[in-house]
Image 1: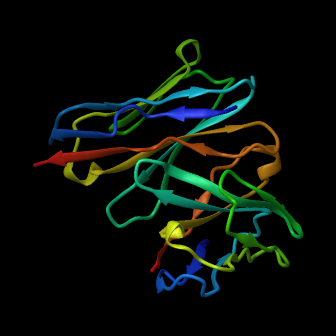
Image 2: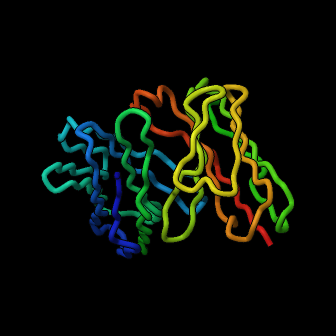
Length: 114
Length: 115
């Protein structure tokens, strides 16, 4: 069965610090998809990234970067030079192939203090 | 504008009083789903639909019903709400979900309180 673990319940940093949010997943499928979503205080869910299991390339988008490692079943998310606007709950999610659906982790609440 | 619309956004009701949370998407997505979000538990899937007239249970379907008579609409029905259904509910849709390639587009959420 698929499972996503976000062991960090809450993280607090000071602005401009770098912060890494951990995500560990379990799946028996060889084809699967990993996602990160952001939920700001306003409550909506914002898609950040999708990664396919057959593409282990890390990705960078501005201050955001993602490290996908199949060997450790991890898909960690790093924010460089954090800003107050990064304060949110971040969810990691896993979706297996055909007819299995997206499973979310419990989320990590990030607070960035000025 | 492409969007998923849920109504109502906020609702306080009493135990046993039937209610429906509507969800509509304008992106011609085949796949739609309902999630509930509770503190410390993340989002858990209630029901999903691969296409019109095709629905299936998610992880926490007890106490809920759904229907998919039209592609754009996927209402969530609580026949006899109970306090443990107090939660934040999200509707989501996706294109080509059967091939499992697309991200989910979420509605803004519906906060339900059952007294």
